[in-house]
Image (cartoon, rainbow, N blue to C red; front, side, top):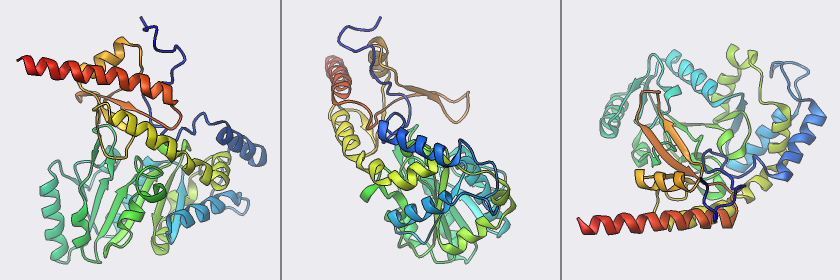
Length: 338
């Protein structure tokens, strides 16, 4: 039964909507405005003469925000991963996926590593031999609440390619939420950042941030030309409301800090927190919804985590922090008595 001190209307802490835009009234209004202008869906090719200009508009806005040569909008992060792996393999690259790489990158032809040091050694060995090597990793794995250690990428030569999946980093980490493009933009190697827009911006689509040459290669593929893009209402919201979205980071940072003070394990400045079995039980008993995930397959061990967003109120976060702080104190007392 839900405890009396927790409101029945408490927003769930169980899914990534980091900037709180999924229910933000102004953001919803922008999406609605876009739907009124362009309809609920555009099912044509980006290469068609009648393609709405809003797609090019949002790509320009995002490129200016990130300080990037080119941004390419596609319909999903998973599709983008498939297209990028296919392209790199066709170009003759040995594609090496690190331990935190999302399952969609671990496709046929990709060599996947579970040990970070073995991955690093193999990549540097191939690169120093002059082989064409492409390194793939998620910047943050939100399920495991881990951030990849990637400073060694700065030692890769110019012939290498680095592909970073920023699905859980863009809009959240780095100056103004610029994520990996801002952090690693000066690499000697070619940098490609791929990111779902759903986790931070509540937009059903994804972007590739890259050089103009890489963007042109992707745009010239049949997969890009033949696929529908993001629903135009969402593209309109992102093109016209990016500053509104990024302003939400202030509230998000405050909510993160309040939960971090309660003793939860997490990546610094990131809104996903690991839960111990005891913490998960405490939240469940109090009626607080949090994420339980078996990743990457249904046979994997269940992982519990709490995901906070800018949409959570100060009161909601404080109540959950109080619950978890009490749980941490009880755990510490129990350990001390053993």
